[in-house]
Length: 136
Image (cartoon, rainbow, N blue to C red):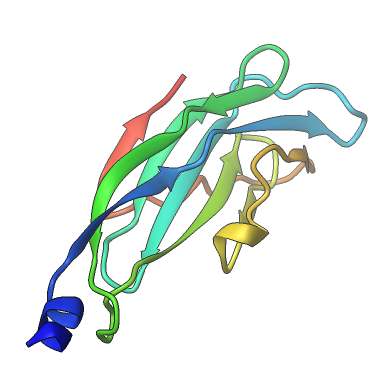
C-alpha cells in the first residue's frame, strides 16, 4: 500500500514555465534591429503542448520576457511521470533571414543571447497550435 501511495499519487511542485530571458538582435555590422518579432517557446516533454510568448525588439534591438512560474504535478516512479522543460528562440523581421535556436534541455538554453541577423528572406516564426501570448 505504501508503494502505491508513493508511485500512484501526484506531487505538486513549482515549475519554471519560462525563465526570465532577454535577447539582443543585431545586424552583421553590429547595429540594433528594432521591430523584429521574437518568440520564446516552452516545450514540455513528454505530455504538454508548446506555449509561446511573443515580443518585439525595441530601439536597442532588445526584447525581454519575464519569468513565469506555475505549479505542476509530478508522479515519480511512473512512466512519463516527470515533465522536462526546454526553450527555444525564433527571431524574424522582413529583409533578414530568420534566426531559430533550440536547446535539448533547460541547462543548454541561453537566457540572454546576442544574435546577428543576416540580410535575406524571412519566412516568419512558425505559429503554434497551442497558446501564444504577447510580451513587451
